[in-house]
Length: 484
View 1 (cartoon, rainbow, N blue to C red):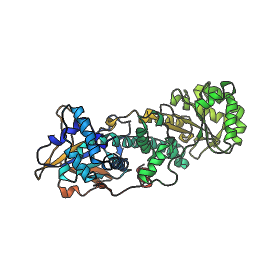
View 2: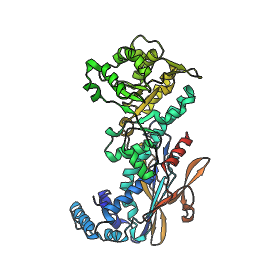
View 3: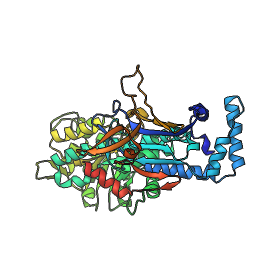
View 4: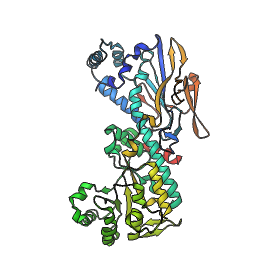
């Protein structure tokens, strides 16, 4: 698709609407609010800028600059003339093609750091006065692509904080486990492949467990990821269990353990009767499970996650299987150890994972309820799916890209947005902006001079088709882990 189509239709006339003599448009990308974010997501993780601008750069090179000018400009002229119902002049697009690069300068906060609401994370400004219109022409595609990796990384970090909090309380010698305790199950429920990738990279910046396989190649491409990137385990699905038939489910378990005699093996266990698996089949398979060189992970996939994992009873020794829940039932069969903090840890040959309709609130409740029964939080892995990552929009953190400064006939004008009918969320910064780090937190300073704008924490990452200050995944993950 022609790169010039990557915008809102109404932007195709804005080059004519700015005041005559406009030379510069300066905009910033800012999370304005966490009003709709999960509880505990007080800040936003800076992540995805390098990916988005590399993608945009590559797309324009492949689908605009590298194609014959007459071909791409005539195509857009024909389409927009039909679209707008009047002959469309593409002279400004022809001049852009002659330039052969996007004439913009992009600055961003370091990826992997947390940023308070109302602090700009990215600024974009045109570098050539003739292309003043390009800054906000690109707003649409930048907004489309930036919000999701940042949002997913921020929510993933909230999960990781929950896991670390409870691991320190209940199994402090196994805190490294939290890197894999939140596992990305989201791909099938996301809004298309690009959504799955951008969200999955956000998750992958925080956790090491993921079943969103395209994340690997994209983190290698955009963030120079080396060696191990994310990982998973051998695991079944319902089709496998069904094919083995309901009458021979225990035979299917044996077949799977024979197929994978070592390592972690995750088996869907609620295709028919989860409680029968836990009270009938697994007791019969106990010695085979304990003799295996690896961990068998039981995966329920339906019901109330908190009740299924922890039981409906808040104390040990419930009467019915549903009172006990998966972890307590596994303890009854396989036992384990009591760690130095006094919490029960399942035998290393057995474990549990739950990956349906998980939220940060449910993750907190699961850890709390396990704690109440005397179990370490590290007895369970949670699959974080589209119920977490796709139930978001650009408004989850109130993201917006707004112009705050223009230059007209050599004169800089500080501009801003502050709708009288709004509650204050949509009020923008004013003029050129600078972000400083004060007391280990990022702070916005607006209405600064051009010289002051060149200072601060926002660093140039892209200018006139060239990339600067690239960052590797390893560095981003280190920053994220340092923050918790």
